[in-house]
Length: 201
Image (cartoon, rainbow, N blue to C red; front, side):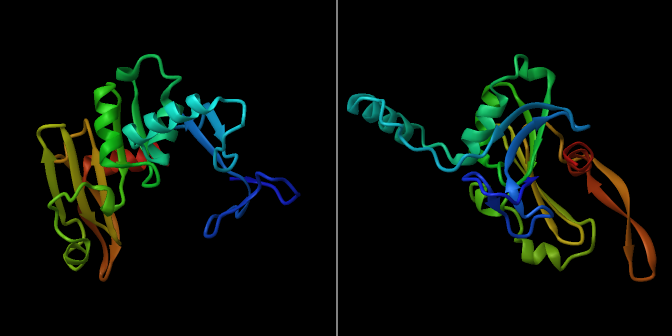
């Protein structure tokens, strides 16, 4: 969000964000903040009236056939400037992440990891987040889709973190310190979660 309080049709209000009023930008950037490609949010896309009825029909039929979500379209548009997908690792938050998107990125040779909303995990047979949240800190559960090579993991920290990846090994763990009753303790964290925290932030 780029802070802006004036009058403009593209100005947005985002509840819960540090910057609540301004322009929303979707950015493809390096992990240290260098922007490669920026797409300003301009509201929902509408027909400009210059297309013929047959062109609009073809576009409608194509969009229904592809059935792509808004988040999937945004990610693919941002990544369209990347010339060598195999040389990069992509990290994204749960607004963009979905199982279908990661299968598509895998087919295009993009390596991707992201936090994910549980209703976008294609009914993956992981433990319920309510059950996992009552277990000890550092407890995790994982599944692997051998057909599409997509791994999903749930990890219990201060809250349950759900994450999917199409290239990282979810069986590897590292240690992190957490404040708990009685002082600091070391808990296990999947290495893919540690990588996400390092590069996404």
